[in-house]
Structures are given as structure tokens and as C-alpha cells.
Image (cartoon, rainbow, N blue to C red; front, top):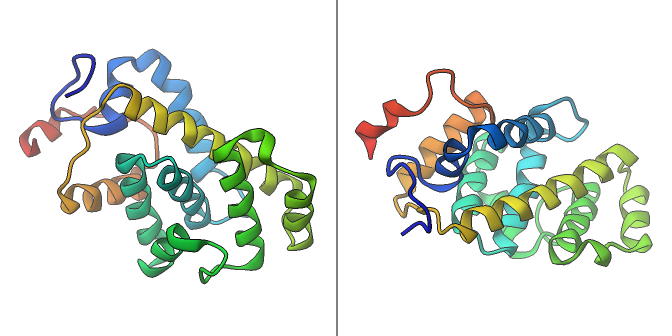
Length: 188
């Protein structure tokens, strides 16, 4: 049960963003820029960062939503599960392993990011911008995870909900739908 009154048909962060559309707008814009904007990291790689951080923060809503989006973007579901289990042995590039390591350190504490972790990422081919964006995505998802869980937002248990949400995220990105979300009331 959410700590504040939220629209029943809008679980997770969507209900929170609708509750305060004025504060939601810059949040949505930053997320859209980082996860869907121009980058040398693929959208799937950026979703893997979001998934790993949400998994480590034990935010079931965000972890499941971004797993679904990553799976769609990667075209398969094995990689995401292996990244959550142990990104060091997952079937991703050495550069991605180093960036996921940076993200995991940020998730624990920004001060845990060491020069050695950054050197590892650079040695694996990561650019300064990729390192910057990894840190910012990881920090942003720490905020989202605490936002969703701190207000006890509804977390659906039906896997079909997350399949639909993953499709919505990959199709529409992180911007508010032009028509809003009233059409989802029928599905609630």
C-alpha cells in the first residue's frame, strides 16, 4: 500500500511521476537523454546498467522493468540474468564488465569508485563520456529505486505487466505519453 494516495492503475514510478508532473518533467528528460540519447553505449548496454543497479538495490519494480527493456533491446534474455548473477562472468565485452563494475561501486557508494576502477574501464576502451554516463545512470537509478521503494509504490507481480512495460519503454522511451495514462485504467 503506497504511503501517499496514487492512481491505482499506475504502479511503480509512473504513478509517482504522475503525482508530481512538475518534478517529473526534468526526471523524465534526464532519463530520456541518458538512456535513449546519443551515446557510444547501446541502449541495451545502458539498460543493463539500470538493471544491475536496481537489482543490487533490491528494487523489484525497477529491476524487473529494466530487465524487460534490456531483454527486448538485446534480443534475448540470458545476458541480463547473467549480469545480475555475476557481471564479471557474463557474456558482455571487457569494456562493459569494467563499466558495470563502476556502476556497482557507485551503487554501493560514490566514494567507492577508485582510480583503479576508472583505469580498468579506460584500459578496456571506455571513453571519459562513457564513464561519466555510467556513473550518472547508476546514481540516477539509486534515486529512482529509493523513490519507488521509499513511497511504497505498487509493484505488480504479473510478468505480463513487465513485458508490456518493457515494450512501452523501448517504443516510447521515458517521456510521458502524449495521451497520458488513463487508457491503462482498463488494464488495472
